[in-house]
Image (tube, rainbow, N blue to C red; front, side, top):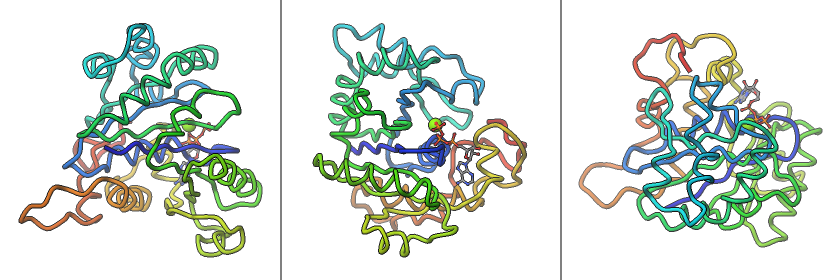
Length: 265
Ligand SMILES: Nc1ncnc2c1ncn2[C@@H]1O[C@H](COP(=O)(O)OP(=O)(O)OP(=O)(O)O)[C@@H](O)[C@H]1O
Ligand SMILES: [Mg+2]
């Protein structure tokens, strides 16, 4: 299993967009669940025309005596291409209560899954909020930031704070302008775990706000995230077939059904 947490320290660098793309490009030999644990509340349900329930709110209400496989999947919905998602609570107040009640048991459940990888949109880290309880035991923690001074400073500080508390975290850059990964890493002495391509057109489609992309799977954003997914996912069991490369993973992105398409996300 693998629990991958995406978070941010400032601004809106693209955590939700990247988490969606990561879940959609996760290698097909693994089962993957997207969890929207944003302490400010969820946006995936409205963006994708899903209901606020089932989701984390209904799971929390249903799991007072513990959480098991059946309950998790019972409260899961599916994105248009089939990605399973536990959508976040509708409002900030509700998100606070839900994450307070659920973070511990959900994390225990996630870390005990042998066959399922869990990708968590932790939103922006807030001191004292229970998303910290999810981030702690995660195998991979990435603080997303655009490589601009206003976002790099708080994001680097956040990585340092996580590292100081024993959590192995690194920066995930969204774009490489004005500073690239090598420059950021050297200048700030921080681990940069990867780069998501700057691709407003595709991001606009994935956030449901505007536009169409002729072939989402070949877009810079999806291809860069597919490469990351290949790196992060547990390897396939030994078999005669060659290990799929990122090109192939990008071909199988599952946030969309057929192509070319009007993005219907
Ligand atoms: N790789 C990208 N390239 C260009 N624009 C992007 C990229 N990823 C996201 N965006 C844009 O950034 C904005 C914020 O995206 P998103 O909602 O994913 O950010 P977030 O970090 O989850 O924000 P919040 O903290 O509000 O939850 C959206 O307009 C989205 O289209
Ligand atoms: Mg978000």
